[in-house]
Each structure stands twice: as C-alpha cells, then as structure tokens.
Image 1 (cartoon, rainbow, N blue to C red):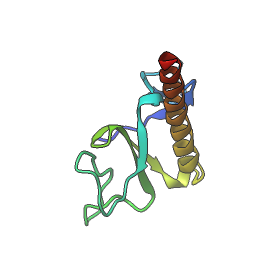
Image 2: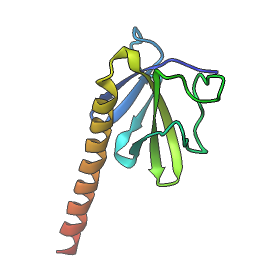
Image 3: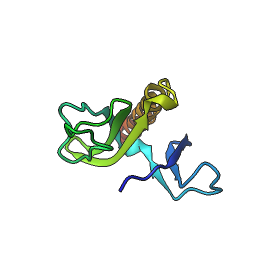
Amino acid sequence: MQVRRFIVIKYGYLFVYEDVAARSPIYAVSLQEYTIQLEDPKSPSPHSYTISPSDDNMPQKDLQTLLLYSDPKRVAFQITFVNTEGEELLPKFMAAVEAIHESSISSTNSCIHKNKM
C-alpha cells in the first residue's frame, strides 16, 4: 500500500503530515542522526521498497527515492519524490538534511573537544 504524505523540515526535524490541510503532524523525526542517499533504481537497497513498480520491477521514471540511514547499513526511512512536483525540490531536500547532519557532527565534536580541556 502506498501512502502520500506531506513533509516540512523545520528546526532540524522532518514533520510528516497526513495531508496539506492537516493542522498537526502525524509524527516528527530528528534529522541530526541520519545520513541521506539518493537510491540508485538499478541497484536498490535490499531494505527499501520499489514504489509504483513498472513491468520490469523498476520504479516509474518520474519517481526518485531518498533513503535516510541511521547507520551505514540500516535504512531508517524511505522518502519517494514525484519529479513532476518540482525537480528542484529533491536536491534542496537533500542539502537541508545533509546540513542538519553536518551541524550535529560539528556540535558533537566541539563538545568533545571542550570536555578534553
């Protein structure tokens, strides 16, 4: 079963809404602990699902999937974008998640450094 959701990134969190008119999110995910990767449809992760597969079990051409990893081998979340909804959205989303993750690493390193002093 496929479900369409609406997402917002704010304050380092991914807020997931049931629909565009929803007043509050279904859930929120702290993005600091995740890395992000664009899934290669020709070599998908064994831990992801193909959304709207075509006859050859490949995703439809207008879909791109991002995987959020909690560690290098564990897919925690899968987000599939429809390209026709704005092709600039996917790289902006990836850049936002990467920036949040990098800032959390930077903060952690500075805290470790302070503790050593």
